[in-house]
Image (cartoon, rainbow over all chains, first blue to last red; front, side, top):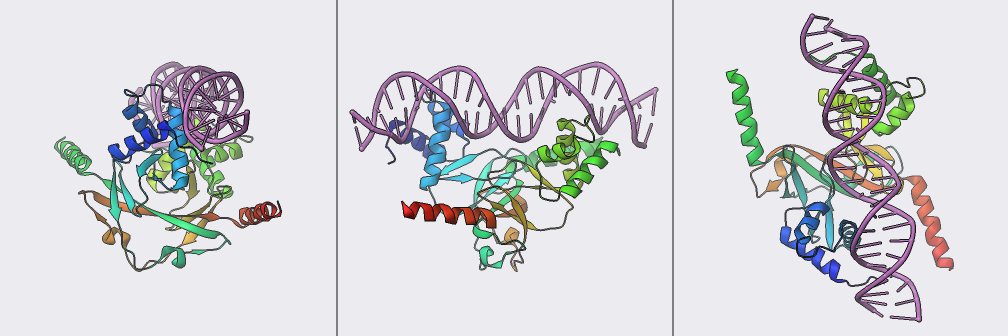
Length: 137
Length: 137
DNA sequence: GTGGCTGCAAAATGTTTGCACGGAT
DNA sequence: ATCCGTGCAAACATTTTGCAGCCAC
């Protein structure tokens, strides 16, 4: 049976507090000053475990490492291709991709993910500046 | 200007020949016996470069490492959660997710990815067998 | 001839694992 | 008293990088 431990509570609290879809490393940095004996490995293990439990969700953003967020509310994400920052996205499809999709091979389809990629406000601004500088040359 | 090199040709040929959404390591294994001097780093660099050119596509499957495929035909993928094998998928949405999505923050949305996860025929069979064995216990 | 491309090895990064110990049940 | 969860460090896998020489342009 799964055991309740102090480490789990601390890690989940940190995840909840951080909010911004942090990597395991960020969660570790958050708790390390206060709890220097909690190891990276435990952060990885707890997050992966809680993900199976459904307490937390893993975010799969193209081109980034593992990220997690607290809760299991269904929604999607957009990832900035400049800085990797992730924001929540909602999407109300009237069609179900699971029903619409077609595959030549006989896979059992269980779930799907939709991820968006783009630029966050800050990186967009920086990209515009860079373009201007190039025109001046 | 981009240069045409023998390595690029060889790597792209191998990618085309392999077909099954290989990792850079698989491409390297494929060409290594015939061309032992082509390095892993070059495979990574060429694939990433050609991806920018649009000659090849990078496949982002949840929980797997980088994978590539030749060509730029628009389509999606399903990844087996058992063995990681990837198959092509087509999906004809009548709605455009880029227009439908809503985000609290002011991101510039550029593109989206849809990935499916499930079980390939072989892994489904194995999973069924395992379940039967557990019931017998 | 110039400068991008490559090979090699080393480094960086992200994640997993083995093992002994301590704590939750 | 069990035996799961943890800390630690080392292993591991993947990808990136620095640099010198080479080759396409």
